Image (cartoon, rainbow, N blue to C red):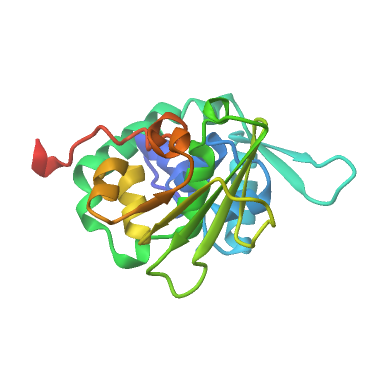
Length: 227
């Protein structure tokens, strides 16, 4: 895609303006390095398009593509030029929270993306013990209703099959409730008080969920209608 203009905005858009590219950069900056990790955060992207976009970003110097030692496949790392897009991505998210959040459709409530964000939100240093298992049951989904987060040491894994471990905290709610909580539109306390969310587990974990599970970095931004 070429605009035939010397304007730096046009030249930048030639590199990052194609469909999916900004979201791929988002995932890279959020710590995704392997193909399946990136694909998990972009559930509707085809493997062919993801491969094409990653190769293009590598050709443009935004991504370093490295062979995984002793394995098939590659890892993808943001270069310095890619990292310098972080404040731009953050500003784009700020704008979206103010001006685009009213455009949410039912099809936008992607459970796989939600679980990826919740996985990244766990503050393992605020949990007690060597391992904490959190189970989510989304009452309004017809499939992929049950998910687990397993926090062990500094690592957090997300599972859509029972890992066979004792569960410490159970969350039961519609998916929209958990998305609204993560986005900052609804507090855990209000959701529990209004019976939108059931949280079962030791009081040390359920009394102040915000202390060990963060919400979105955009959560404090009001929509344009509230300004």
